[in-house]
Amino acid sequence: MKIEEKTLLEALSLSPRECISVIGGGGKTSFASYLSRKLTSMGKSVVFTSTTKIFPPHTGEKEILVFTTESLWLNKIDHALKESKLVFLGAEILSSGKLKGLSEKLCKDVLMKTNTDYLIIEADGSRGKSIKAHSDCEPVVPDFTRLFVSLIGMDCIMKRIDENNCHRQDLLCSILKVNRGDLIDMDLIVSLFKHKRGYLKTLPRKARSIVFLNKVHTMEDYQTAIKLGERLLSLKRIDSVILGHLKPPGETFTLLRK
Ligand SMILES: Nc1nc2c(ncn2[C@@H]2O[C@H](COP(=O)(O)OP(=O)(O)O)[C@@H](O)[C@H]2O)c(=O)[nH]1
Ligand SMILES: [Mg+2]
Image (cartoon, rainbow, N blue to C red; front, side, top):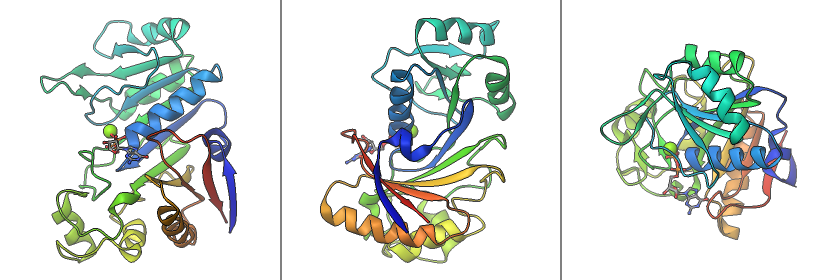
């Protein structure tokens, strides 16, 4: 295993005009916002959207909100990208204040028919929890995704499975055959990645697959994350693991490669 310190952009090695889908818990919106900021500061344009319902993120950038229910919304994206490098795209605002996300078909239209450099998709919901189980209809990850990022918040490790740290805890228990109150240890996380109903179930065949272990703040977190990262890297469908913290935003991250 190779261990290197990198900026996020170095660690992700993006190609031009890629679709990046982000799943899991404990930092998807923070990850997407951070990546958007880094890309736009390099002069790249970004459309940030979701295939589920999310709260409009506060990226810290001057983003422009566009809705697919507006007429000529694809043209509006190109127009908006001239003013601001970042467009936040939703279908409509719901009464809950959340934004309704897009279908996979409309996500594809964004990539094919606008000038955006990158499309970043938050592809599931996790109610702010650091780990989750996916229902049968999620995450919604378009098959043209080229970078698939699975997030785990490392604050859940060695905590007990309960409603504070796990979204859809009963589903997680039934999938992994464990019980509420059991420890979220490394074995459990590794099995969640290996299981056919687990985190990688919708990983597109052509996508690179990265796990981001977030909320790594202390030396102890770091050592635990390195051990977990090494075990995850041994799985065939995981190409690399990144450790670090997005809040406050880190400048560099630890990249683990095979
Ligand atoms: N301590 C800590 N909290 C974080 C970090 N990144 C995100 N959070 C917090 O974790 C929660 C979930 O983050 P969010 O980005 O909304 O995750 P999402 O639910 O997966 O989209 C929020 O309360 C964030 O403020 C981090 O690196 N460290
Ligand atoms: Mg979110």
